[in-house]
Length: 145
Length: 145
Length: 145
Image (cartoon, rainbow over all chains, first blue to last red):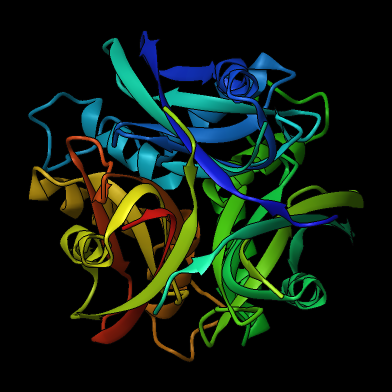
């Protein structure tokens, strides 16, 4: 493959969450790449929070996401005598879950499309009980139309 | 250090795995950088799967890798009543193990060589029992030949 | 936002650690961006070690960091019959803790400043008992001066 010149564009997406769980944001992220005329390159995805995080996971069977949520609950149990408890019993587990998943991810882009594997989806993971507005910052580095 | 102009190149490597474990892919990745005439820059490494993942870990004592595999087994036990079980008892633990390790990594490149620490190796981690063909996508952003 | 041309600069920061814990390195990293005349872009942060790691976490209540350290101790207990034990009882847990946190992170940069969320700080996490000198490699890709 020949080398291509590089430009950069950035954008912030906002998502409303409604309690703990996985939100597939692949479509919104892909739409922005398309609208900007992205070609080949690399997309950095960054979440500006410490009690919500990112992961790339299977997008076929919704049970996978439920099992992943259970696994995070096991790794960061709620009924533990945390020092930091003033923000509610869901807050400290949320920080732990964020720490063991991802705050930033980099995904290859081919001809303007996320070069994800067949079964991969990009997820925002909410770890708090209350609804939140979450900011996801996109930075595309690569060839632009 | 003076700023340098930036170009981009990408490539997909394929690895055959034979059951759970760590495969050191540092040499194959480094060879591609060398062949492309990479100079200074940054290499993004992305794995296009949700039941295999990436990590940078100690490359000196093979026992470290065995202990890491055990630790992943403890964090994602096989004998658990997962909802998602149709693909085998190794599948849901594989997704959990992928989630707590890395799908993407970015590694500095100096004069065409991965700027890894003395004891760091780049590993593809297979989490499934059966042999798989795994795709790893490289994106180099930096100075080229 | 219009696309901007892209250049690249890199730098290595060194930090002295004094036992397990979280060191906020946001200020040192930000200072380098400012000194280099960074504009908009993306900063890659890479730690060249396998028994210390990176994370972005809450910077408001120090108790959060203590609870995170406890959580890592639970995920990687010291009193376990690890195969790899010649480097001390803190070494293998350190590798496990590194694996489940981050070796590399990418953070958006706006007008030369890290575009972190309100409560986000960038931390170097030391997992070994003895003092260590840790190298963190920065790569800025974006608009310069």
